[in-house]
Image 1 (cartoon, rainbow, N blue to C red):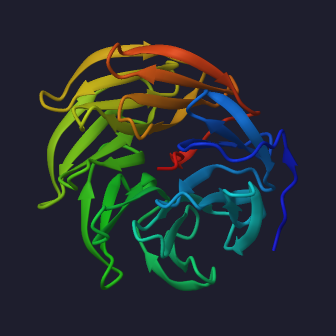
Image 2: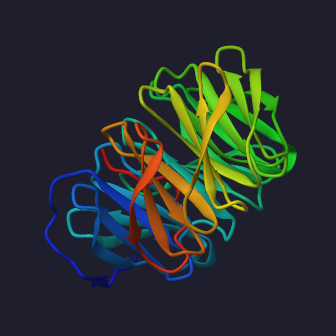
Length: 309
C-alpha cells in the first residue's frame, strides 16, 4: 500500500475535477474546472500515464508502468490509498459504470486484467490482440472495447462472459477510443494512418473513416455527441469532426504534443493535456476555440477519462 505526498492541497470544492497524469513529473494535477486552477498536486510514483475516474467521483485510478501497476487515489483526501500490482505493461485503464470493476490493459502481455474495486484483487485476465491500449466500457455495462495497437483492431468483450465477442479491423495503430452516449458508435484514433475509424457497435462494422492530421491519439465527444475532438500529437492541434457528416470542420491549435482529452460534464468544454508543454488547453465546443491554458506538471499525458462527474 502506498501513501501520497500532497502539495498545494485545499479542501474539496464543487465538482467536476480533472485529474491530469504528469508522466515525467510522477504526479497528478487536480484541476478545479469551476475556476480552471490546479487545486492540488498528488505525488504518484511510477511514471503515471493512464487515468480513469470512477463514475461516482470517489476514486481515481492511475496506471503506473514503471511501478508495474495502478495507484488508487481517494478524491476526498487527494492521497494514494492503495496500489495494485500488475506488470510494467499497465497503460490503458477504465472503470465500469457501477464502480465495481476496474479494467487495465497490459501492453506487453496482450491481456486485460479485471479487478474488483472493493478489495483490489484480480478477478481474471482476458486475452486480447497485440499491444492493447485504450479501453472504454459501455454505459450499460455490457461491453468492454479494447484498442489493439499493433494488431490494428478493436476487441469487443462481453462483460457477462468475460470473453471476446468480436474483433474488428480499423486503421493503423489504434490507441485512444471512445463511445457515444447511446453506445451506438465507437470512434478509434489511429496513430499511424492519421485517421479515425467509426464503428457501428451493433454489428461492429465500419461506418466510415475520417482523415485527420498527424499522429491522432485520443478522442472526446461534445454537444450531445454531435462533435468529435481528436488530438493530433505531431501537429499540435485538435481536429473537430461533425459526427453526422463525418467531415472535419476545423483544426484548433493547442499545445505541443497533445494527447489526453476529456469533456467537462457541461458537454461544452473540452480539456486537452499537452505532453511537451506541461499544460492543459480548455476548448469551447460552441466557438471551437481555446479559451484558457492551465499550467500543470511535467509531461502531462492524461490518457483516459480524467473528469469526475
